[in-house]
Image 1 (cartoon, rainbow over the protein chains, first blue to last red):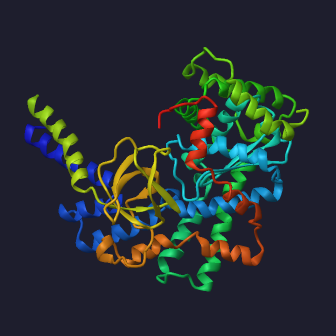
Image 2 (image 1 turned 90 degrees about the horizontal axis):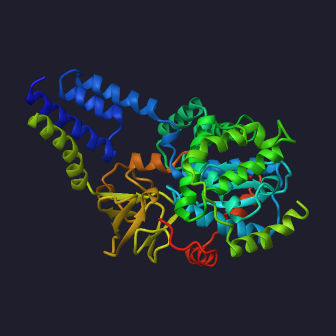
Image 3 (image 1 turned 60 degrees about the horizontal axis):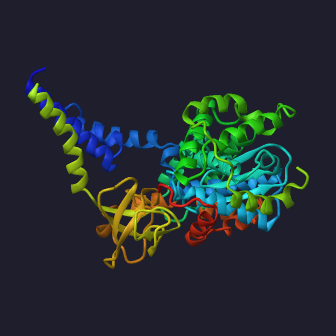
Length: 308
Length: 158
């Protein structure tokens, strides 16, 4: 390749990168335009590529934060059919202070409806992150935390699932393709009753996919590892000791040893293997938990935990 | 060799230049967001913007866009609150203002939305009582600042 080729190629690459960054057009559209410009595709063929690409490219990534919000609300409502919320205003208020003060430090601080947290009246060791930021934590999971720092580690892990949109990725592509097709076919701002009924069915199936992943099948090991690693970064940015996630995992491992096959143990890799994966990234020196944080955690959570 | 270095430089600078030239209107993609005086979620609020509002943005810096409101007020919004795609048609805006077609806007505003949730509520398929109670558990930036101060978590890297 001679010098002129290099320059031409780099300008081309630069423009493509710029287009990508600008998000001006979908990949299919850029491809079609390039094909048309270079004479590889005829006008008709280019239009066809654009239309086909638009339908195929729609995936969980094309769901807007508003759509994610409505999916997340329905996911939470479905989880509440199995797990009763814990109606303890003081404990939930503290949980939200802690959780929302962490969420502002996340890589995705803004979701459509914001991050919200709630305790579940269940002894199962578990926590769920519904898309959009509705995060649910069982009393059993709370028992794995001896102080605010460790509870912060649990919440940070769940916030990072929301941040990475792991819940939305559980939705089967076929449902999204169907939903986007219905929406695209109907030009009116409000959907007709038939389209609304079809769309509602796709919506319920999509919500079912997410609920199934949260409560039964679990995220992939890679997604769990990514959420752990992101949680460590989040704890650090928010000023909490990163080592809190290791002590929390250790306690969880001990509690789960007696409950294999239930709740969190069913949907997550073992706590000890998660801790082993994190250790190299976490400073070993650990300061004693702050007295004020220890006290406010105890005040808010002791009444809920009772004798643990 | 020199040409190769030049080529790499061009490949890097072209997107940056084009990016700056395209600094453009963006839509608010969350229900409401607070425009901050500084690039921080805990910064002072200078204005509030609602879903679908269009703001003029400059070049993004560490996840924060400098924004200019329609009334000329300036501040910062986190990138997670903004979309380059249109999200809703607002009263008083035209296709010319937003540079997009009505079809695109209608598409963005439809789908899994309030209309679908309303149908599920009406049919009694899902009980949203606790979901609505959760939504009400909002914590303000001032409360967060105080919670962090009392808990000896000053600063933090936002």
